[in-house]
Image 1: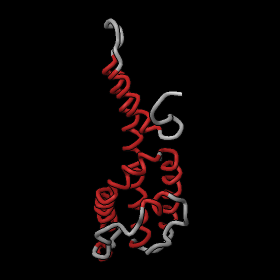
Image 2: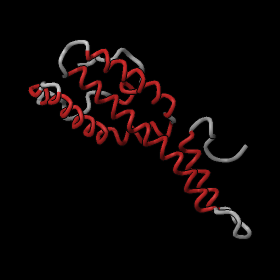
Image 3: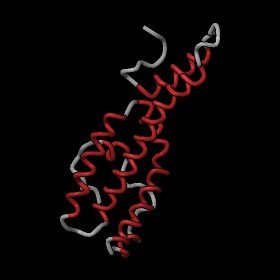
Image 4: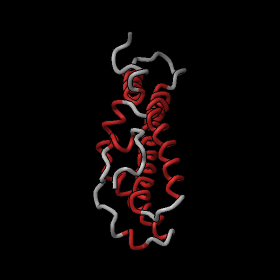
Length: 153
């Protein structure tokens, strides 16, 4: 079995490690484009990471809309979206992506808060904008795990 992170255990870490190994390998001749192949492998991992960031941002936005938006049937649409995004996030998440997302959570929340503010204004709930927390009331665990949406206010 190769050294380093395993593909099935942590895809993101595996891509970064494999690119590093590939760059360090000696290669005879010019037939193999080692640098670009390594870059493409790294890009696969970065894509997973950025997808996870986007899903967290979307989930946070909908959680905030449920907690602070107008009551009504629209909430079920946001709950539906959260359920789908959480399922996708589960597919993208790895131990390393979890740690990187945790570190990025304050910035992701700030983005989600700005998006939520615009959406609340669009919905005519301008007064609710002032009630949006300045820091995330949700942990990454609460954001990513499929609990009934909207429980936390």
